[in-house]
Image 1 (cartoon, helix red, strand yellow):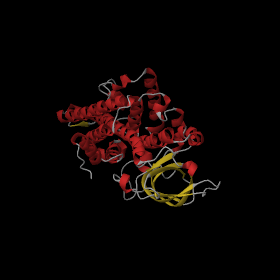
Image 2 (cartoon, one colour):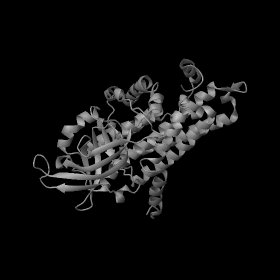
Image 3 (cartoon, one colour):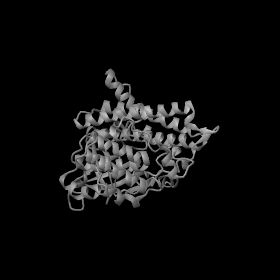
Image 4 (cartoon, helix red, strand yellow):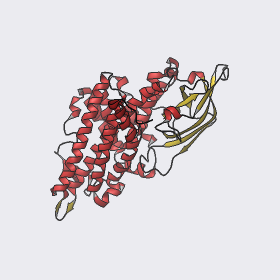
Length: 406
């Protein structure tokens, strides 16, 4: 439910009005990309939108829709020949309908699958990539720790110790000990990419860990007020034995990990765009439908001012992300640019969803009207893949030459 009218009447109430993509950035996509985006929208409208509120309320992940999602063939779009702009817009569009589903998608595809493409050995790709890209198996990205989020690069406590001849086949193995927290998809994933510090030299290593290995313990983080459909986990590793064949040969330092995080940070910024598109959609529909003092809310000047401010934030945010996508296409998007985009767009998102929640009055705090869910989910986006503050200071370091982080 998004307002006070039946669904058909609600759709009619806003029919013919301009889209939230007020500057028509979607027109920059190729014809094939626009057609694929239309396919995604049909899937989301039929399989996700009617049920997303219930999943969120119940904190249940809809595993049953994954085969249909896989059939869209959207995994790691750039690897399939699509543009970076298209990759961003599909994340925004998923977020527009359900932030949790978009978060699952980017954790699995933009971190796990892209990691296999970028850093996996030929053997690892042959064993894992096809099933992962087609969602027959699912993955997680285990980096953040209970005591280390923004400072995990220097503070990582999870340890890896090499054991010559320790594998079942007589080859070398690694023993992992430590803990990870806030791991999206962590409760049900088949594999996780685990980052650990090598006891021998202090370097950062990456491992593909079968989630069923002895010594792996997973528990769901309860009582969340955002992204409730996403299954975040606390994970502990106690003397977990991982074969050398499952170490990421392409990872030798945290800088390698940063290559992945830059891409995922961009996708989370696109989520912030999607949140604003969703908030505008819901707020405008409500303003057109809802009557107070004998007329629609949309007839009041301050309501129109709020809607235009929300739209302006969304359009400005989308414009910035379109430029980031163009820089990605050229191989030129650097971390300070990405950090500025993530901090700016997430700040505009927070303003936008707050205005939307206010516009709905008391109905803005119940998930029946969607805005409460949008408002709550925005807090996760504001924080993860680098908090607003950390991303601001990364950009600040670039423009001043002086670090204020440490």
